[in-house]
Length: 390
Image 1 (spheres, one colour):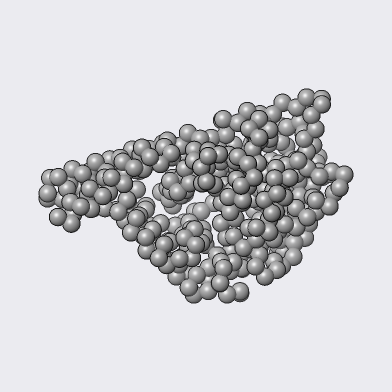
Image 2 (cartoon, helix red, strand yellow):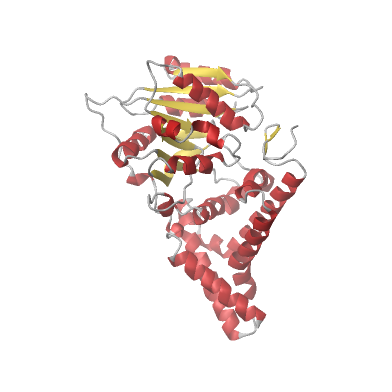
C-alpha cells in the first residue's frame, strides 16, 4: 500500500512538472529571442563591463579579449577588478587588451579585502561600480557584470543591449554554456542546468506578472539607473548566490530576461567529480536559506521525484510498477532537450536518478560544511553567512 501511494505521488509530481512548471524542460528560452541592436546616428548608448577576478590567470586573457572584440556600435569599455590575485591576473589582462589593440579601453583596479557582511565577489563588483559612477562625464547606460572565466561571442553585447532596449528590460542575463568535455562534466553538467531551470523556469522568470526572479552570474547586463533604484549592490552584499539575488532585486524595478545561450561559454573546466562536487557544495545550502527544515524537504522531494520512479518501476504490484514506470519515462523524456543542447545522447537520461542522487549528497555535504563553519568556500574565503573566516 505504501509503495502504491509513493508511485501515485511520484507520477503526480511528474505530471505537474511536465505540464504546470513553465515547460522548463523544453529548454527553448534562449538569446535567439534577442534581436541585435542597430544604432542610428541619434542614438547614444554606453556600456561598461565589470569583471571581478581573483587568481584567474588561466582564463582572464580569453575573457578580456572576447569582450574587447565585441561587434557592437556602442561606446564600450572593460573594468577588471583584480581581487588581490597572486598569479598575475591583472598583468595578463593588460597584455590581452594590448594584443587586440584595445589597451585604452581596459582599466584594471586592485581590489581590497571585503568589509564585514560582504562576499568577495560582490565587493569586487562594488569597487568596479564605484569607479564607473565616479566618471561623471562617461557614466554608462548599462553595466555588464561578467565573470573572468567567461568567453563571449562577438555578437553577444549587441544581442544583450538590443534585447534590453526593445523590451524595456532592467536586466538581461544569459546562462553561460558550461564546459562539458570530461566524463564527469558529461554526466553532471547538463543536470546542473536542468535542475536550475526546474527551480527557476525561465518562462516564469521572464513573465512580469510573476514574482519569480533569477539570473546567471556569468553574464548579466543591468540598466545602471534601475540598479540604483533597486538599492545598488548593497542589497545583495552578503548573497552567496548573488546572481539570483540580483535578479530578484532588479525585477522589482522592471521586467527581466533570463535565457540559455550558445554564445556565452564558461572556460572553467571540471575534469573530475570532486571539482563539480566543490562547485555545488559551495552554495547548495545557501539556496535553501541555510534551513535544516528546507534541507529535509528538498531531500525528500528529490528522492520522490527522481529516485522513487526508478526504484518502484519493477515493483511486483502491476499498478504500482506501471505508475512508477510512467513517471520514469516522463523523467527521461523531460531530460532529453537538455542533453541535446549539450550534444549528448538521450540514453543518458536513463541514469538521471543516479545523477540526482549525487546532487542530493552534495547538498547534504553543503549543509555539513556550513555547520562546520566552512560554508561558501572559494579561493581561500569562507563566505556563507555564519561561516568562520579563514
